[in-house]
Image (cartoon, rainbow, N blue to C red):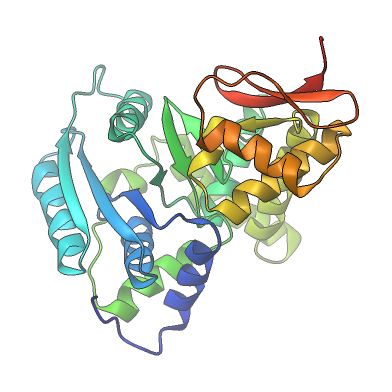
Length: 295
């Protein structure tokens, strides 16, 4: 295993974040930027079997070289790495995102991406301006891909500082300085202004508001367990199942939790499973649902 420098306080924060919610084998979306480099390094340092998926969107000059360099760095740390060229049509940010997640879906297993607390706060603001709620969750299915976001409680300053601590030079996407993009203006203009207004850093409060909004949305759909949950560590997975049973009014017992878990991890066409309280767990197209018998 690659030996990273110590002590590295920012790197420790990133490592602590991935230790909490990542399975023993996972892919990671690696652009070569500071966030994804810090995430990849932390996964490797924690002993996770890592495959770096370096997506070449082909939208900028030298994009292939950037992807190849990111893959080279990942391999130097002991990870596997693949450079994956994709076709983006039309050549827009939205189309690139969709194509990237479709490429992740083709991988066929969970993929970690390096969104930070700062990304969560920015997305919350942008979504609110569009009359929507923030959809950036720790685990989600996006374009068919099983996505894990371990760094939503980690600041961007930590990922940048991690790269300095471990001696790696990240790539800086020139689009992140282009004020033609809404996110860049929010990051560089709106958030600093909000900080001036409230007399401090606005990001933690916005991120907390985003989490509370998500928690309320989750509460309203808490009686379902997404199929993507099956790739989480067993303890995390069974905590989610127990929460769904509790929210539905079912009996939370080890046999019931393990029985629902088998609908996720050992699926072979089973029918509904009784979970007490006149309720059953049944598998549908994209989730396990807890509902009344014969509903």
